Each structure stands twice: as C-alpha cells, then as structure tokens.
View 1 (cartoon, rainbow, N blue to C red):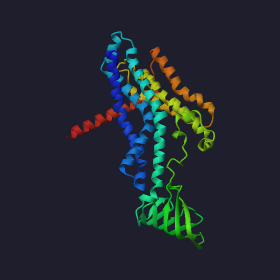
View 2: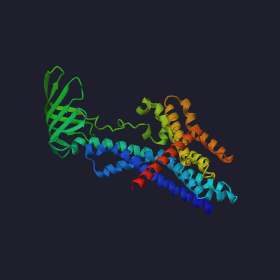
View 3: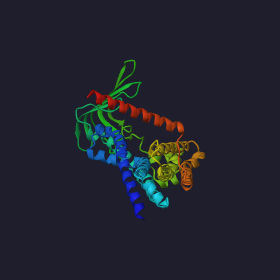
View 4: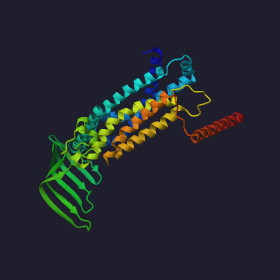
Length: 392
C-alpha cells in the first residue's frame, strides 16, 4: 500500500473509532439500563450485571458500525478538502483509486467483521441473555428473597418467607395471589420447597383462602400443594423456547419443521435469515455513498451543507428501507429480493456515479432551508455578542 493510501486509511480509521465509541457507549448504556431491574429484583451481583451488559454489546454493534463509518469517511475527506489536500492530489495527476482503495478495503474488512458478529457471536449472546435471566428468576425464591419481608414477584403476586434453610427448604410461607380478577387467593404453609428448575413451589401442611368478588370466602386445608412458578422463570423476551434471533445460522438455513417456535411463526425465521445475510453489505454500500458525497475536491463556496449531513441522510434512508423490507418478508416471501436489492442497488448506483465522476446533490429547497437557518443563527449570535459588548 502506498504512503498516501496508508495516510488516508489511518485518518479514516481513527475518525471511525472516534465516532463509534461515544455513539456505541450511549446506545449500550440505554440498553443496559433497561435491564437494571434484573439486578434490583433478583439480587444479582455486579459481576452478573456486567456479564449481561457484555452479552448485549454484539446485538447493537453491527447496527451502529456502518453509521460511524459514514462519519469517519465524510469527516476525514472534508477535512482533507478544506486543507487543500484533495485538490493537491488531483493537481498532481494522481488516480482517484488512491482515495478509493483504502476506504473500500476497510469497508470490506468491516463487512466481514459485521457478518461474523451477526451470524456467530450475536446468537450466542442472545442465548446467554435468555438463560441468565431465566436462571435469575428461577433462583428468586430459594436464595434471593429476604426473610420476613414481603416481596412482589410480579404484578398481583406477593411472597413472604419466615426462614430459609439449606436444600431449597422454606419455612413459614405466605403467598398472596391477586392475578386472577375472578377471585383472590391467599396461601399459608408451614414449609415448602422450590424444585431445582424453579418452575414450581411445593407447599406442605397449610391452607388456602379463596375470596370471590361477592365477598364470600372459602378455606381449604391441604397436606401438599404445588404452586406454579413457571411465569417467573420466563425471560423478558418470552418463554424459554428460543426465538428466531437466538438461533444459529445453520438452523435458519435448515429449520426443524417440528420446532414449536418455528411452527408458530415461520415468517420470523425467514426474515431473520435474510437479515443476517444482507446486513453485512451495508458498510460497503455506505462507504460508496460517502465517497460519492465527499470523495471529490470542492470549492469552499460550493459546499453550503456539510457532506456528512448528505451522507447520513442517505444512509438513514437506506437503513430504514432495509428494515422495512425485511419486516415485510415475514408476511410474504415475494419481498425477499428487495432485502438484497436495497444494498446491492446502492452499490451499483454509487459505483456508477464514482466511475462517471458524478456527485449527489440535495434538492435546492433543502439546501436553501439549511442556508437560511444557518444565516439566522449567525445573525442572532452576532446580535447577542454585540449587545453583550455594548452592555459591558
């Protein structure tokens, strides 16, 4: 690789990291905070919470990375144009491939990385999240709930335990169940135990009070009573049978027709397959769009709006279109070609524009509106600075 290509590659990669890390951190933090109830409700350690956070990262990285790449390319090339580096390269008679090769090469590397994360790392991390949440709620009664303290397990279900002994043995059980609108249930039991899977609570030597809406109460004594806890062992994403996003690529390519999840919604599995086989194309298509927008030298008077805005508007539009057609494949397989057509046609059109030295131009109305807003802001800033100067 030539010295100039190495220089461009290094600057773009540095700007790509500068854009990726803050945006990824913000989105990651939002996703992690959405799971904070797992720690507060089930008493998990900070180490478990950090493990959960690490599981979430592979699910958002492939989505954020192409947009950070757009910012890295457009910002670097715009800075090189403002510093007259791009005009000097053109004036020296150098080929445009000197600029194109390092960017397209980095785009291919990012696409391979995105394909690997989406198809191999993301399913494993999703399964880890599901199993971790299920295990936390399964262990809720036997090890987490404090003794002699009422605890809300879910809306309408409350539990109190007098003593906890080894072997998942519980003493002095008090369970209040208001989940059924037709009647209220209150359980008392001298002792009980939770099965290893956390799916049922077996209460012994107790009684249950059933109160109907008209106020009548019936009392039934029991020697042994099994209380269903399966609702508590379900993860936030659904029950334990894995969804389409949790499956590996091999299963999506050849799904088991007897799988319960696949039988309920085969369209989701087909949509997930085509999403994984098409998402890795977006770093390349976004790179070509960014080159069309910012890859040529321009006069400072010519550019009224930053090229990054042009590129991001196009990138967001393409990504929204890609998500839309992917969701449509759940309804009909006729939309499958559109899933691949969005990034591939973008590559073809952008490649043609680069080969013919064409550029993307926003509508004049949009450019005039941006220029008008920019002028208004500058005038207000100048007025405020003048008024503050006269007051002093």
